[in-house]
Image (cartoon, rainbow, N blue to C red; front, side, top):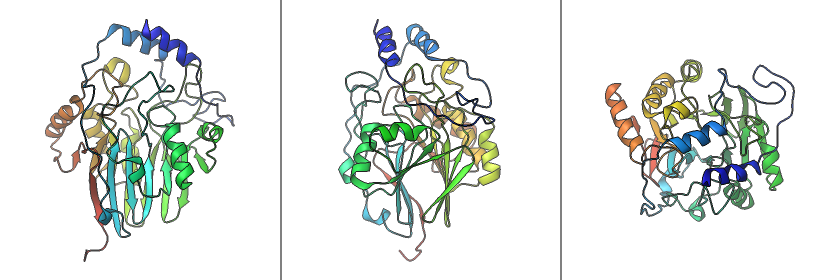
Length: 340
């Protein structure tokens, strides 16, 4: 019965729609992946009724960390894992966040929907002033309005996202937004940011599926190339982007929310596919994400970590090259001042 109640609730929610000229991936109404995607909410509902989720803990004790000052300086490129798909990146003094979510639930409602089981690895109030936010798409676990409103009121960062998503943000008073289509690029200070194809979808209710654009980001500085996958299934786009833009100094790739494969396989990587994506991108270092915060699929909380270990062994990828991060931990990617 609870799933039918959720169906009713989601029918009452949606995001504003994108409107623009027809392109090779926009038919005038919806955006499309290269391959057709047929599974929708009713398939999801059937899956939820017919399959069982592995148990997750109600809560995992974890103490938020503060980002050490040495990782915040000019001359440093570092990455801090906060939770889910939220990373804080310092790129030679430019401070940015990916898909920030600090809310208790990944849901349109504060009282129902996927609830976090661990506190954010860095407390909101301990974040440095943010210059830039990258939003991969509008799902609730990636575009969290409450977190974005707090960040915007505090820091007024530029937000870069796919076509159509500014309409929702502007409804909430967030107007410093740059929309991008696939394969477009924009400059921000010393960064060149590309919005590129990935195999996923968008939607915040039953009637706005694929009405705004989703994608991945490539962030280039004079000293580094960073790939933020957002959320995606596995396809030839990783190899194409690795050949065209790689190799990458750092890739942030999802490793969770992948079972059952019959439903999740088209739009979510499993850990073995994440390792293949890492290899396709020719990534020097890859950090896993999209795991351990919200139970969004059927696998256990530990499964992404265990399955990633198996996949690394299968493809002879070293642990220090592709690993699941600890919440709140900061990783040095490059130190541009060799005398420090």
